[in-house]
Length: 308
Image (cartoon, rainbow, N blue to C red; front, side, top):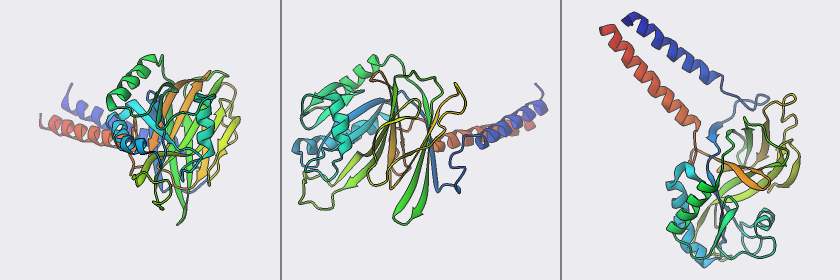
């Protein structure tokens, strides 16, 4: 190919890449531009649910390295920490509801771990034990339902924020599907005389939860102080791909979306704030970075073609 033709083709690639960015799906069209926007693509991650407590001495020796365990495994695992609604300042009724689905007839010990709702482990576990159960969960996952999630934040006041989560699932969902969304926060102990085991900050704490079916019907909701709003018109036309839009208030470090079919986990994705970048499978920053790299490479190729 002649150099001039090669340069022209490379310019076309750059133009198309830039146009593609402008056509990324937007949320919050009825509001002013958000202060922060993030996006994530995925669904392959394994869901690690942990029952822990601020007064549990065994948890105090485990929780710090569990956070590192999750961070080091990037896209493979997403963690949610539940605190019991009893003598724990971070406890919530959502914990009672969620744990009852896994152990309806018993009270689990502290700490207890589940991988994709199975593989229960209690007590003084080790990193190798968690790794083995993580691998088992990965091999047991027959397939994963993919999702794309957009998270926008508006600073409403100095003490409040508006969070908007848009969930796009490209696959058709069967009638027996449930979608669960958790809001996660990192919470710090303010009064160390109450239920204190020596850990000042607890990460990935589930502070809100909403469960709804594939048709947008809410089956349970635990809203914390912010509450939830699931927008009407989650489907556009019969048989169209669903887009679910959720709004809530208050601070958030991240959100985790879980798709279950017949009670079996089929898709998990986490999306996190820039200051808490955990397990983001594909975020906006990465997309921009890749595009910038492509543009630099294209410029180099164009310069070389002109010299030929």
